Length: 273
Image 1 (cartoon, rainbow, N blue to C red):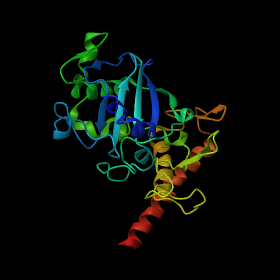
Image 2: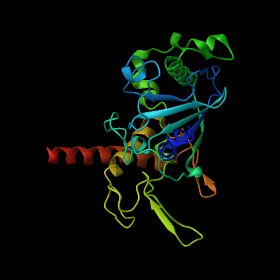
Image 3: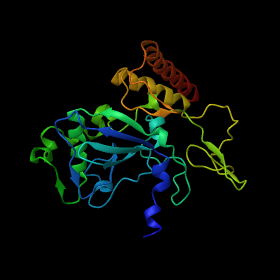
């Protein structure tokens, strides 16, 4: 048990963390006897991976880990590979999916200040209820019946398909970290926890664009178009926190970026075919 409690630590630490708030919703979160819930939009509640004690693997690109913290607060953990590129196959494994390894975590990257609508809270409660083993509870009886407002036929499209997604506009496109210790030793990790010499690791002086560079910027533009100039999650960068609202100029640049990168990716796929 001492070893198993560290099983998922590296995978979760390398994900994008977001804390969402239901204080502006009349409906609050329920809790269940399956409090750490895995949601993957490609595996509905009747799929074999979601029956009884099964869960979709947290290392699949599109798997989100959901954990209610209180009646008003909930934690979302999203694989970085999915937050950067939600256009890929969400059923495949993220880069470096190995368990039981060291990892680093950036506390300033945690996104906060996202306030959920009542419908979003109901969608989350429906997922929590669908994934419960046997018991659920809530502060009010009517919250226990989210199926009155939400249907499992929309499982793939909750929150326009991005219910648990962090706001990509508040994410930095980091390539990893290098640090030194007091004893003179040093270490380096890329953003997926790979070390120098490990397959997939690229030197920090490698300026060639990565495969998820264009999808990430396309997604920033798509997210802006879908949800408007007000951000759905804010991060700290140094002593400052992101602006709640994008300027008109920057917002238009994001919209233009979606079109630009869509065109580039289409041209690239066409030439490859």
